[in-house]
Amino acid sequence: MVHTAVPMPDTIQTLIRAKRTLRLLSDCNAALIRSANESELLDKICRLIVDVGGYRLVWIGYARQNAQKQVDPVAQFGFGPDYIKHLNVSWADTERGQGPTGRAIRTGQTQIVRDILRDPQFTPWRANAMVHGLFSEITLPLKENDWSFGSLNIYAQEPDAFDQEEILLLEELAGNLAYGISVLRLRQEHHQALRERGKQERLCHAVVEQSVDGIAIARLDGTVLIANPAFCRMTGYVTEELRQRTLWDLVPPDTQPVLLPLAAQNKSGMRELDVVRKDHSRFPAEWRAYPITLLDGQTEERAMLGVIVDITQRKQDEVEKNTLRQQALQNAHLATVGVMAAGIVHEVNNPNNVILFNSNLLAKAWKDVVIILDEYYRAHGDFSLGGLPFTEMRHTLPTLIDGVAEHSARIKNIINNMQYIARKEQWAVAERVDLIQVLRSVAELLKNQIGQRTPLFIMTLPDTVPPVWGNRQQLEQVFVNIILNALQSLAGENEAILVTLKAEPEWDKLLVTVSDEGSGIAADHLQRLTEPFFSTKLAEGGSGLGLFISSRIIENHGGELSFASQLGAGTTVSIRLLAMEEEAAPHLSPV
Image (cartoon, rainbow, N blue to C red; front, top):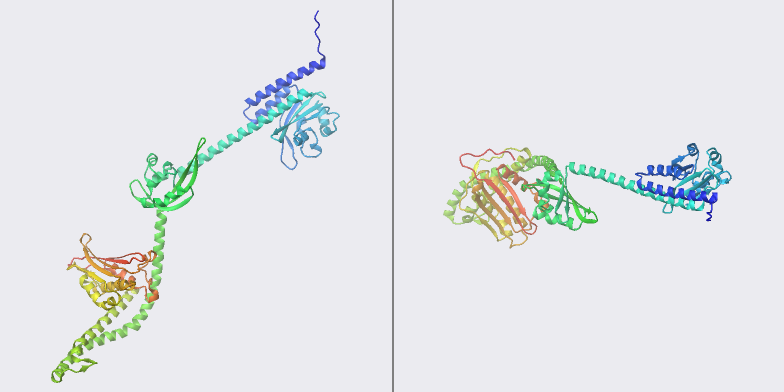
């Protein structure tokens, strides 16, 4: 006969508990896998602990990081929900932090209350626990790395309900639960990050697509990858056409070296360069470049974000502002000239009129006197007159008198010019003028100054040119002023001045150029040469009115005055005048 041993009641109870706890652990692991979010996981775990584990009550609490260090219940299940409402548990080192929950969170170790009725540290919650039939408890910390962020609290309806094997299995369950919470949180953070990233990408896409500035992404070799509508609209290309080009194709060849270093050095920068459209037209733009990194899976590629801003309007506004500023400045200067001209006319014009009148009178008197002197010469021979022999003086004195009259007339014309500047009166431009004669007259007038400065004064004139309608005296004044400026720029005797005159039949114009091998003019001064009172020779007594008056005279004649110069390489002044028909003179506006 075979005898079978009958297990003792305690042993049977232990096996039942172990089997039940193992099933609980398995079901909880399944819940960890299938739960979609943290709240769902906590609810499932609490239900399984009561329904499968056979415990009376369970709740999960999270440790708050506030001054009171409260523990907030976030999930619960079982008998006694009112018990949870009145817990008021803390994880601080205070009376309500000395219970199993507070100690588990502070120490990171499992806490067991084997008999709630007799454990002194459970005093604050004992009465409430007795009401709900809770006689023992195990509290398991929920940890992430070495930090306890909460606790799993399980209650049994009998004292000393947790044996060692059961404790180990519940600790494993708590560890798996903490890990599952961390995974779900990471997943939630990842999904939130993806949503935020998607939101930001949509926002960025909208900003780029709706931007009025042209935006493109290009590789460091300039190859265009993508471009927004504004970029396409500005350049005249569609996106597919841009992908077959580089950013360098969109700037003039001579400015490519300015843009290329931005990509080569992989740094941010800004340049003002023209953009060349598909139809080869251009517009001024502000180019901005920013280094970026393109990510394709695990591959990174350095690239460039390019932005072009159309600054056409800004450039036009700057020109307009500068023009208005210059006009205001000129108006102020001209007002000063008006006051000054009134004084000059009063102080200089009157005595100059006397000189001009007396020189004409002397010329007439000489014609009468020379008859008497000729008779005396025939009767007595040569004699001294003003320290010179009469035979020499007879020819010299008329020339001297004519010279006084001519230069007095020139002074009068200069004074009149200043009056016209101030009053904007009408110039008298109504005669046919032969520029060959004008230039020869000016060369003769400046013969002494030319001889003192250079032996290399070369004037190349054709035999004939069409006449121009204008004022001979004013045109002589222009060429005198320009040639004197050229002479004053020469630094050595071997530096030359070349004056040429030629016709431009295709434009119905005559071109006079005065080129010197002098010191040249700085680039920032070229645009200001015709401003009133601007002079590069103020220290030498220049008034700053010569080229201003000359430009007004040429403008009044319907012509053009331009300058080309480089420091150390001389200057060329070009004057273009209309070759007019002889039938009628044009009406020209005041200076």
